[in-house]
Length: 404
Image 1 (cartoon, rainbow, N blue to C red):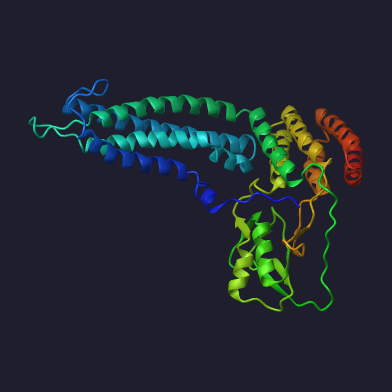
Image 2 (image 1 turned 90 degrees about the horizontal axis):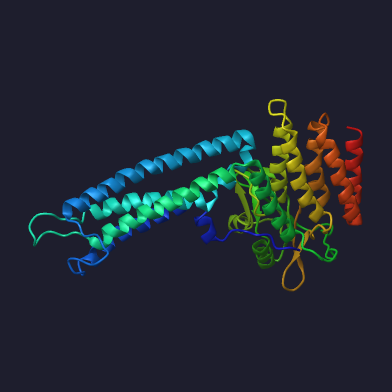
């Protein structure tokens, strides 16, 4: 089976929106402490560096700090407005994509860096007699260069925001990520699944629940789960699929081959399944389809009445489904290095994804002129390229469209 993506501990550190701006800000503080020390080793006047006195340096650094904290507030405000617009115009489920964009994070980080660097260097400026006077030329010049970098980031940020809130960019971006994930989860030319497993009568089993955790299944670390099952000499059947919601103490994994598990072993199995408050598209292809369907439904609502946007979403769904119906659903079974089945999964079936992409749009778009025609053309194309395994699902959807 395909090996789904999962985040490494290092990648998890950088996932929060604040992680990169905080790292840039801390680096700026460190630079603000170290650079004045280097300045003391320079001659009094270095060409092309800041040539003013202590008062001029204080004035420049104070101006930079004051201006940058104001601009930082402006950028943050613009970001909040864009998030609100995206949530109301498209779907709240795309907010995670906006927050994960590095352009916004780097822009905020550079602005914060300019502010904290200027304040840190300001404490090093000394006036008074010639003996006590100290103007960190290199540090003040660096603060000026940070301002120039901030202006470049601001221009890039404005361009990025104006492009990212366009409906075509939002839909295309979701489609690109979904197609890339579909290509990984359903590789081209994958052989038909041959491995199989079923528990023998009387095989002892133990249940592992979600414990005190709750949330949506966003990752299943298949490789790690296979290793744990091999170490325990058991077969682990995962009772949930990626994208499912679990409340506390709901069934998570059933272990075949042991009548019971101690807490340590149960925690090892439990840690292989990640629960979060929001769905992501790291392993959950259905979430990408869900976002596009939500955009189409909102566009078809009486309050919006924008069937053209709904057709754009259908076109992007066409891209995803056209790839899926030419690929086989991955195997449910994961084996260890010796070829023994150790994990039984619940992959997202292609037929279920076809239903997810079409059923609700058929329901809400039945009174539209554009949407049923476009859906009919999409289904005809999918039937022409689909593998035999997926044609019953497509035929069922086409019949549903005809009777809508």
